[in-house]
Image 1 (spheres, rainbow, N blue to C red):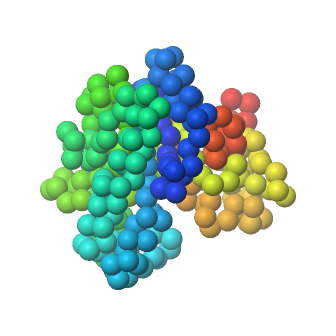
Image 2: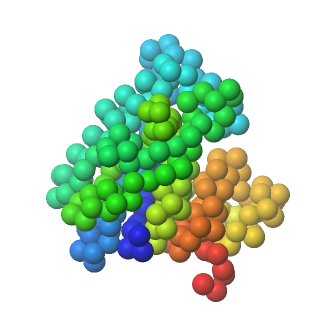
Length: 248
């Protein structure tokens, strides 16, 4: 979808969205763009797990997802963070709809490594026809969950989910909203990057563990045809832009 813009929002960011964010969405919609928001909920999942004495285990930065953790994840994403984001959009006068994998099988996926991580998945398919129709008249708010071919739920990292959906749909732009203004080097934002820059920046420890998954996902997206991936803390700030070529 050449006119599709995907924005990933972390669970903590929902309560911090400002009027500029909603105004940018409004401008995109008025310009005929299709807008899809993919929301996380990691901090809220961890908080609820602690309250219910459900142990949280992470391996290689991935939340190991047994059936109890999967149930909590669905509860938070579909019952807490998604309604909170939909409420904010409604308050700002933006037509929006909450979506998940079970709506016309929007997202299908496979296990990353069931033995190691449990019900953690990656997205392998998107019902493009259904999603395109949905996004014609409203902003989509999609949870990062997928379904296997035989109907098993999968927990998908929100950054990875956003990049996979952008890659599969060949979105024009992908925004990964985070709590920093971009990729920082010596305290300053690196305004532009190409995939070939990453190994050196990782070696120099400019890109640390927390940012690596975002950038790995971003690289896959631009390799698949997404024109630009932007890592920023606000839609109206350029942040760090990743493209295939420096002069693109």
